[in-house]
Image 1 (cartoon, rainbow, N blue to C red):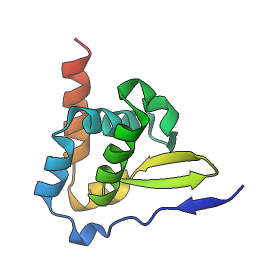
Image 2 (image 1 turned 90 degrees about the vertical axis):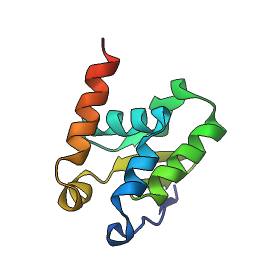
Image 3 (image 1 turned 135 degrees about the horizontal axis):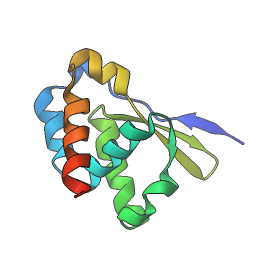
Length: 108
C-alpha cells in the first residue's frame, strides 16, 4: 500500500494569531483536543461523528496549513498526528491549557 506524508508547514512561519484562529472553530478544536488526549496518530475515522467527510477534509487541511497537525495517507485512509512537541517548543503550554479547558467545559 502506498503511503504519503502531506507536506507540513514550517512552524517558524506560523504566528500565534493563526493558531488561535484555527482553533476558534469548535470542530477543529474538538479534533485537536482528541488528538492531544490520545497522544498518538489517529485515523480520520474517529472524527466521522463531527460532520460530513468533505467538511472534515477542509478542517484537516486548515489544521495542517496552520501547523497544528501532520497528515499521513495510506491507500484510501488518512491518519492525523498532532504536532504536539513542536508546538510546545514554540508556544509552551498553549495546547495543554486550551485542550484541558475545552475538555473540562465540554464534559459537564
